[in-house]
Amino acid sequence: MMHAGDATFLRRVNQSAVLELIREQGPISRSEIARRLRLSPATITRIVNDLLENGIVLEGSPVHSQYGRRPVLLEFNPRASLIIGVYVHKNMMGALSDLNGEILERRVVPSVPGEAGVERLIALVEDLHQASREYGLPVRGVGIGAPSIVSFEAGTVVWAPSLGWRNLPLKTRLEDTLHLPVFVENEVNLIALGESWQGAGQGLRNLICISLGAGIGAGIILNGQLYRGSHDAAGEVGYIIPNETCLGRTYDEFGCLESLAGSTGIAGRAGARLANGEPSALNREENIDPSDLTAEMVLSAAREGDPLAESVLNETLDYLSIAVANLICILDPDCIVISGDLAEYGDLFIEPIRSRLKGAVPHMPDIVLSELKTDAAVLGALAIALYKTDSGVLVRKTQA
Image (tube, rainbow, N blue to C red; front, side):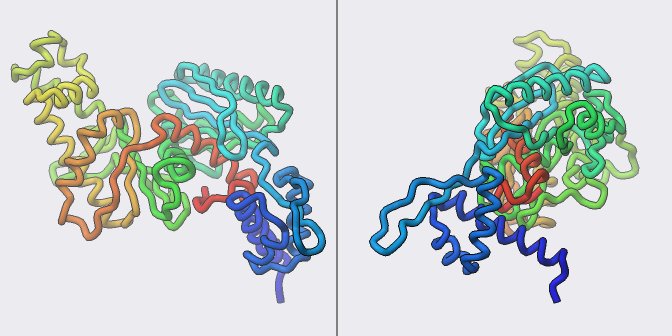
C-alpha cells in the first residue's frame, strides 16, 4: 500500500527528473522524455502540464515529423522567476539572477557592524527586489551568507565578530520586513554550493571548499549533499589542533589553526620576528611598524624571495597541510577547492601542500583554486534560495 506521503514524494522525484532532462537536453519532446525516463505518457502529460502552468517550462513550435502528428518541443524557462543572493563580508555583495544563475543586477555596499549593518542589509535586498520589478518577474526567495556559524533552520547568526552579530535572528528579521522566504547560511557552505553549481566542483559528488582569510573554514559536500553536522558546525576547520602544544588551551575569537595560519596569525608571527630584530625587506624597504603588518604583505614578500617571509610561509604551509590531510583521510573528497581572501596567493599554497602530502594520505584528490573567486558565495546564496523554495526547480546533483 502506498501512503499519501509516498505518492507525493514519488511525484516530486518524477517532476525533478523530467525538469532535469528538459533543462539538460531541451528542446525535447514529451515522447522522448517518456522513453528516456521510462514513465507513462499520462504521467509525463500531468507533470509537463504542471510545469507549463507554473511557467517553468515553455513550448516551442511543432517540429517536422515524417510520421503522424508533429511533436511540440519543451524547454526550460530560466526567467519564470528571479532570486536574490547576498554575501556579507567586508562588503555586502548582492545579486539578482534568473533560475540559471545568470546575474542580472549587482550591488556592493560596505558592511558596517551592529544594528546599522542589519538595516543596510535590508536596504540592499529591498533595492534588488525593486530592480526585479523592472523585469516584470517575481522573486521566489533570498539567500544570505554570513561569516559565522549559522543555525540554518532558525536562520540565526550565532556569532559574527566582524559584524558584532551574536545570536541574531536574521531570517526572522528579514522575512518580517521583506515578506519573502529568506535562507541564512554560513558563508563557506555557500562557497561550496557556488563552486558545485557553476565552478570547480561541477559534476562532483564529494567536494571540500577551504576558505583562507582571517578565519579558516570549509564547506563540505558529501554524496551530493551539503553537510552541516549535528550543530551546524561541520567544516569549522579553523579549530583543528595541528600539534600537541595547542592542547589544553581556550580559543575564544579564533580557533587554534586559524590563530596560526589565518591572516592574523601569519601577520602576527611575522611581526613578532620583525620586532625581535630579524632582518627582512618588510621593515628595511617599507619601514613598517610590525603591528601594522598584514598577511598580504608577508605573502607578497615571500613571493619575492624574502627569507623571513618565506620562513613564515613554510610554517603556515605545514599547519595547513596537516589540516588538509585530516580532511582527506576522514572525508575522501574528489576535489579540494581553495578560496577566500588569500586565494590570490594560491600559487604559494597549492603545490607545496601537494608536495607535503604526496605519499602521506591514502588518496590524493585534486587541489585547485576557486574558479569563481568572490562570486562563489554570491552564487551559493542564489543556489540555496532556489533549492529551498522549490527543490524541483534547481535540478542539479548537489542539494542544500
